[in-house]
Length: 434
Image (cartoon, rainbow, N blue to C red; front, side, top):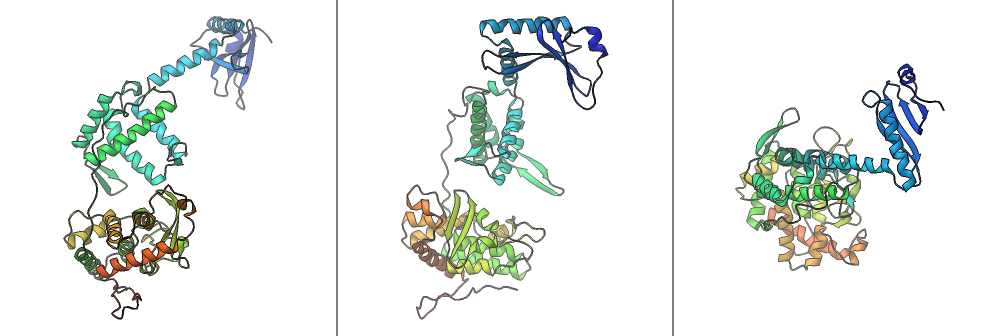
């Protein structure tokens, strides 16, 4: 080990293959790291009395820090070791605290998304799904960053959260944004969007607490507006009108795969994502069930009615595509609801969405006097019971209930016709298919 000098430092040429180090002997432990790029940086190496591990503390880049300054800093750090202190670690923590205090909400959102995409942010003990993260990213980009993005994480208070909520609720973040080559999305805001975005902010600030960026969550004191129950259900007449609109659209050349998916939603009570992304391999005809690997409440085996299975089985498919309801092109599944909205418009139905089909399924089950527990099982709700631990088994009583509910809905739609002989047989689907 030889003594460093300005002459030796200036004469040291980089090795293009790897970095190397020069060492000083006064004080011992001071070194100069020379990278292949030519950057020269002072550091001090020592055994930390705090961690008991070999530690390297960066002092600074040569040119910004002189050799004498590097020696003085190294001596201060080495001198603290005799007092069982690690001055280098303390200074690193001070720099990290300074960086944390200067972190903006926009930077925090980016960190959150990076870790969430890596599976390091969980919801109910499981990593968030890609579809959920896509929605989160949209809310960050369209609402959170424009309003709060430039604010420091440590500065955000409850009053800021309240102002943010009302800004989104009243449409101050409303605009039209481009999506893809030709698509556009209209950001309208509103109370529901504002509430969900504040809930996302709560998760983001919980993430900030876990990473030591602030001690508390400013969303904790936010008073959420009461949840508006979505009680809209279809009457027997409305079921019939909707099915007639489906048939008219089919006759006019509308996508039959999409319409088959909408019928399947009505007859199963499934969530949109569960039917749209259903794979043929998840179809269990023998046990009259759908084996869903990733629902909102985890992996499930969902009992479905015979008529619902037939609706799914007879939907147009493409051999090279694994999905029960394939997209017109590519290897993905259908995603759009444009045809459904047109059917609702033609049937002159107010306030009806795809989710209305799920509420209506539950309403029919209630009409048929099934218990809340049975209806929860048909819909795939989370059930905290011993029975729910065996959700991979097909409950035959649920299959019987699914048969009765789906048949009742099919009769109301006119998809099947009741057998006048009361034999209980279900007639084949009475729909127009090419």
